[in-house]
Length: 449
Ligand code: SF4
Image 1 (spheres, protein in one colour):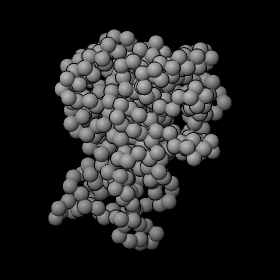
Image 2: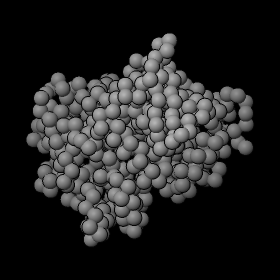
Image 3: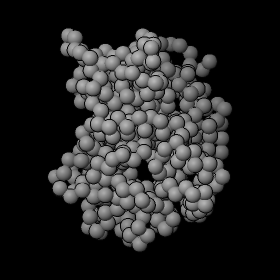
């Protein structure tokens, strides 16, 4: 088996790199150099080992150059990753500045042959500058060429990825990391497992960047991420991770480090298991915080639930000399069952972590949507930061709130934009009116109050 490693400045990713590389992304405007530098410094100090920045155009490439220079002048040489969508010209320009460029080559052009040609040009430029590449394919943005053959499925994601990987091999370009991100935890794990099998069959293993995309915020965002990442890391799949949260980026680092530490130190569920009663395993953890509890417990239980090795469990957590109360344990059980899609008892949310393309306060909007819809069991509601990628990436949501920019929002039912250009102040009401009109406000409780 040939193991490929990617070099992002002085960070080597691949062949089950340990420590697992923890990374995050700025969510400010990349052209606001002061804010971007401040976020990079915060992330670096918290333990992020690389930072990604939104790079929509050539102006952002120049900003990236300035941000890099400012960080270097402060003695901070954290690798910077340019996040480029759609434009091969921007990706090519970014290759001369960033340490790594994240792209989905399928989005370079509508004509597939043009996309392939642009991807080749891009790889040549990356070779010239020693720049690493992440090929990132997200569920919901596969394109009709793939979905007509395979549907919007894990197999479709693996097939979409394998073509670009084969092109890298043909072009003799190996400085590559791969990602297949999905917000649904079992679908995400299945996609990576299929990709790993495809690589093993070919005898060549590229490094993998793991993430549960649009995981949301709070406990659920952390639990989804930990359960999904742990399911793969426990199989030896994955080299670098991001926990995506609809919260300030620095909040991603503590849960990401807890997940990385769990696997870097080779911890196992059996280290925490205290017994089995009537086929139900019981576990006990000693933790310093609620966050540590939910993340570690998800690392232990997530793989067993996703792999359907268990249907139920008992768990205790001890903080110092105090035991976690019943309601904390019950809420965790409900959340991890929902996150792993083993028992749906809550409204499901998809919310992007936001980035430099987000032009509204997504954190407070998402919390308000949650406050007013949390009783809608069985519905999936998406809150997305931008109209460019939001509609594709909200995947299989029933309804979507998508920022258009300039104080306007689009409201979606499935893939259809039902109302466009709604003033932001009215947008949550319009979303809720639509849900009520569709008869999906299941318990009759008014949503608009
Ligand atoms: S959907 Fe969200 S994270 Fe994705 S590009 Fe748009 S604003 Fe950024």
